[in-house]
Length: 237
Image 1 (cartoon, helix red, strand yellow):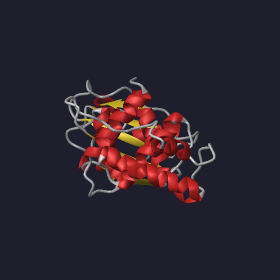
Image 2: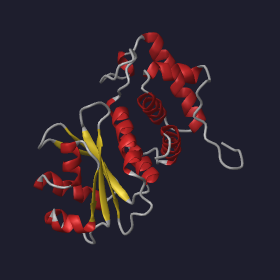
Image 3: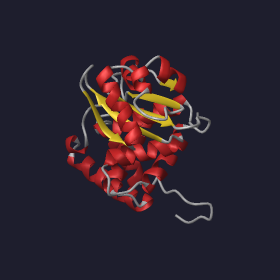
Image 4: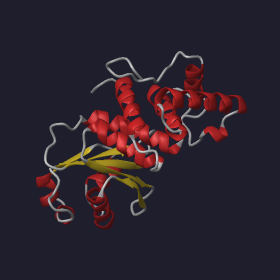
């Protein structure tokens, strides 16, 4: 697997390319699919066996696959949430093991993978992806598992100011820390040319990846020891 830093750098660059007119979760999914090399996918949260919500789907195929799994309670996403493990299902398995799922879309995708979102020890959902006709370009399971956890941490607004992973966001930080996070968010907006929500997402994902408090990552940005600027081969931003 590529280093976590390299994965997040690539993810941040893809996040910058995502349409700003769509919700944050859709932009996160857009970046995830590009980094993983998938044709489509969905983000699903699950707080119980029957309580599932699709937060974002890239296309009708991904949406249909999640809808059927919610009804029959079978399939890669269901298994990933249940086991906390990455589930890879080639076309043959979709057709034979989960026939209703295999019949949901035509043609059946070549491969469907589901990566559990577990920013801590609890699985809160999964990101599923599919390759329509080939799987050679799909990144390895470790990369998908790591990025799914980082996305979940961003969605939940985790990485609190006290060094522990909590369900807090910037509203629960001290005023000085909030100012620092706001300042750092503005700097990342300028560095990456992204929306403020996406800039905060980048900060949260790096806090998760490095196991550091959000305020500490923000401090590094403000003090210019951490820079998210990405440049092209000709040296231009």
